[in-house]
Image 1: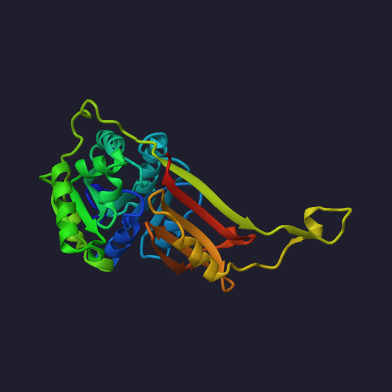
Image 2: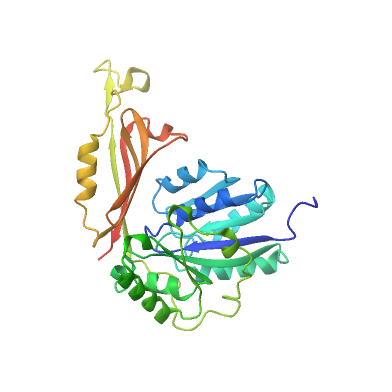
Length: 322
């Protein structure tokens, strides 16, 4: 084994409700790490629109591995184990970061990593479970989301994100609520877009979930409904008699009107719609849409956009199932 390789590969799990800002925080850590420090991200996304993964691939991550169309804390656990072993064997990174889907309770995931610790003789090791809290919206959805409360209850570190959007009184109420759920876990405010110092998050050596899961704790809550919005181009055929692939071509690329897009996003009810993410065609380019609880970003996609060749809109919409 190369002497530069770590004696074991620590795994940091990031969890947090939809739109809390997990991907942004993970990406903000990368510029603060040594240039030769190799990080691989294993990401679980709702649906098949790989929005956050596209953003991650534009970063300095060594690699991004994706698990789609399901939650890896329950039905896709087997895929998660396989992915972790493949990452170890192919990249031998200094660290693996797992980003859970917004509705995931990481207990089952953590237990599977504990099992991998035994199987790999501690070559893979759980370092920490980090929960990201949306300071602006947590008090709104904690009453309706058992998962959000359990994510905060079983964590090594709680990161308070978006606190700059609330006043001191609202922040005090949030911290009181978090202390009620989890008094002993450190609560750290993120530094806006700069995130948090990785030295605070790395090297924790978590003690969580080494014992059997406590009675009465469920491993997953199916409380999020997911819809897909797609707008494509109909084929134009040169002959009415032979509609084969060779004789048909797509319509000219059709841009989305930015004003209509902004108006549609502004009209969404954040009580029932929690997250919208995907891709839109604006000004003859593909842009990444990230909307959460009334706020959104548009980012020019610099990666492979061939999947949008015949589409002007591909969005995943997540919200209250009930």
